[in-house]
Length: 71
Image 1 (cartoon, rainbow, N blue to C red):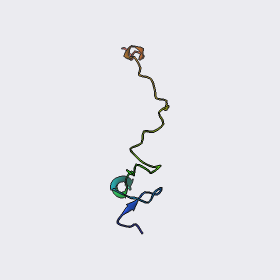
Image 2 (cartoon, rainbow, N blue to C red):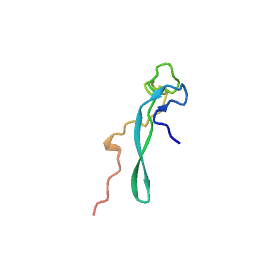
Image 3 (cartoon, helix red, strand yellow):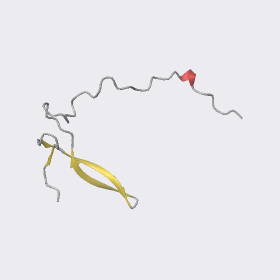
Image 4 (tube, rainbow, N blue to C red):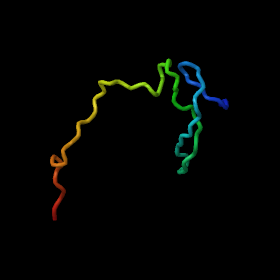
């Protein structure tokens, strides 16, 4: 059974409870789960910057977009 207090799976420090949702039989149902860890010494710290060499899509020039259909 779930406990009232959520903890970080890496460092064991208490974390906030956040509400997520999932769809069941066509209705959105709330689910209370543990939030991100904010312990500065934890490997799972949400405040750390993720991989700085992460590749992102370059900004596209609007002039490069294909023209729409004309009738």
